[in-house]
Length: 205
Image (cartoon, rainbow, N blue to C red; front, side, top):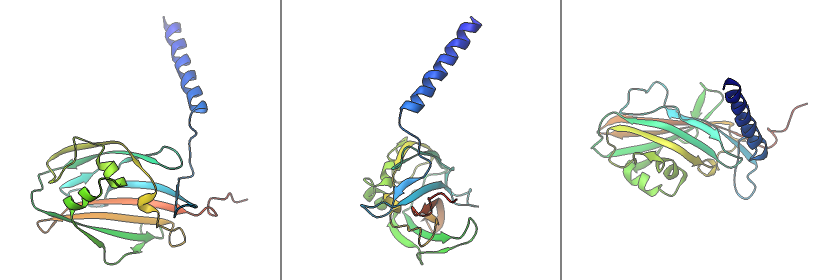
């Protein structure tokens, strides 16, 4: 019986290996990005999660799992925890920074862009990449935010939210989405990404 079990395991491993080689190829050069129709840039989505040093806010987003599906999409999954009901109106701002490295950044847009009422903003974004991510929440993530644990499962993200980020300006970009309610900060979500030109991707000999 031991030999039969071992043989079955090896057969399953062989089938899995064949499926990898005969299925869709894996891509390690980022997804295509830039302005259509050229899409000459490569986008590497590095991190989506809570802003550094702000783990105690009402809303906490653990670092999401990011997997590249192909050369056009990433798949993201994660857990969002709302620690208490947010009953007062919530306003949000978006800040964009360009960075020399992980610790030295400066504003690309100053002051941050105000998006106004968060619930209205999210409603307007239902058909965007952000709406795609939030639409994969279980249970559904609705306004006003209610206390609970929300699991975002296998949401697709493409280049479109980041298509204007040029590698000729900076290769490392940082985006913070910050929300305030009743004059208190309640959440801060950070996105970190790299953008390279096709020239940067050429092998060096």
